[in-house]
Image (cartoon, rainbow over all chains, first blue to last red; front, top):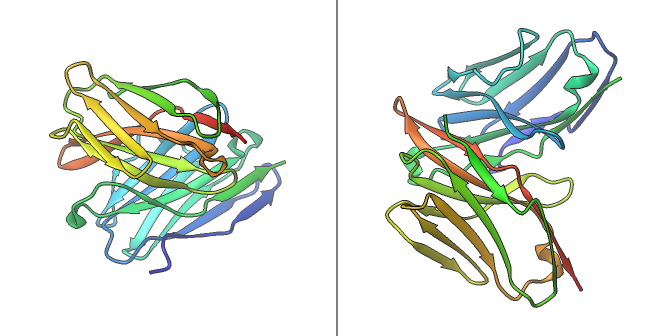
Length: 115
Length: 114
């Protein structure tokens, strides 16, 4: 398996623009998580899905953020409109309780810079 | 909700010495404690984990201990090497509403000095 695949690896955008981050989880994993990492706040859970259904979105900072998982192999995190304070590394991770371990496999992340 | 505190935030050790990172958690229902290593510019990767029915687990040079009564767990790295330099995150996980909920610590930046 190629692991959790995220795209793009880097994104630079102007304030006010829409940004879409993409994630392909490991095949067979039924949990998908979106995290944001900054120096100030560390790793923050934004939202997670189980079997494509959003379970907990309490970490989504505001209405400008939205996430979807239309099928088991694809998820998006959208920011509209983007602001400079959204600059961070966004990680997607997947896991499967059925495999008997709860550890996550993280993607390589998307480094977002909003100027 | 769960609160995970991690100490120290930075740690420098000489190559060959041991390093210890400590975490405490608040929710007694937490039952799974993974540790992640994140090298500069890379993704966090699971390096070792422990469940609440076990007090200690070892994998070569790394070991994790868990004290459920005191609600703390620690990562021990022996015979440190320069490639151990990274940020280490602890986490506590519990089942919530049928789903696993994971809370991460704030990370420890470990520097191994050759």
